[in-house]
Image (cartoon, rainbow, N blue to C red):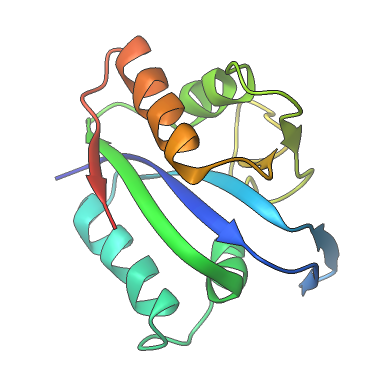
Length: 151
């Protein structure tokens, strides 16, 4: 199964992440990371990998998000099956969702982005995670995807 996903992370402290030569300030609050899994293994393997990192089972780091997941108090994956590349479309829709103070974490997770999104990580502030889940599910539906949730 191929698809697109949004990982919602609940970060409880301030962190400075250095990934390769980039540095990121990660504030306390809720983040949404957008990605896709269109190759071998598919979406279930990708999301399973993130939960293994979160639970301390898998420690090798390949993508930017792999460095942030261990800092989270909780993660939730919302995903949809698709053979099309919805990653940037989903990010753009989430960037414009109706939540105050949505911020782009510049340069995070978009090294292979062809649409020049500038990032694939959003900071949505210190709001209830349930509200974020509801908004993300709504955005998936708005762009004609059928969202599923895993936590």
